Length: 178
Image (cartoon, rainbow, N blue to C red; front, side, top):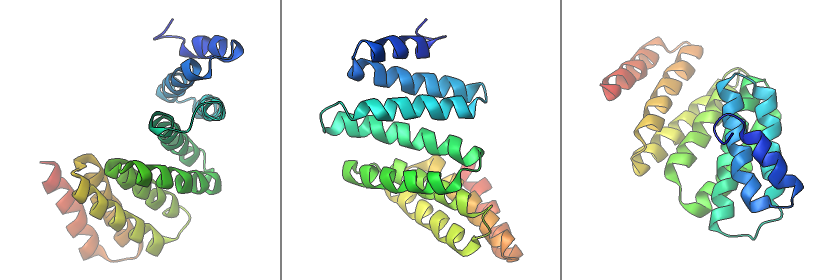
């Protein structure tokens, strides 16, 4: 049941008033829904986990749980074109990641922002966010996020018609990944 139906355990813990126990199961349930491309269901699961966090003491463990839920929530919102909500959620996540000094998460947050601004046609802001992601990823030795940022920079330059800069960033991304 833990692996295949975490939402069932989350639901029962929630009904029993066991918020601290339920929250990680809502996170698992959301992640499981994402694996099944059920993004709307995942958003609901992550939202239930976030709601329950209000019952918990304000400490580093709660903040880490909230950060995980917020970031996973944004990934789903982005897929479903819920950009305004995703950007607002990223603002909250950035504060938490900064407070916890989570550079990898900060880089991911900037990458997500860049990825949201791209389909909105805000290519300069997209470029700025991916550059911030690359800078933060380097400081935090977050190699996956640095690769994502280089790719995002390539996309942003391409959208602006700057083909040489775009190629250079895509090539840097490929070289970095090797």
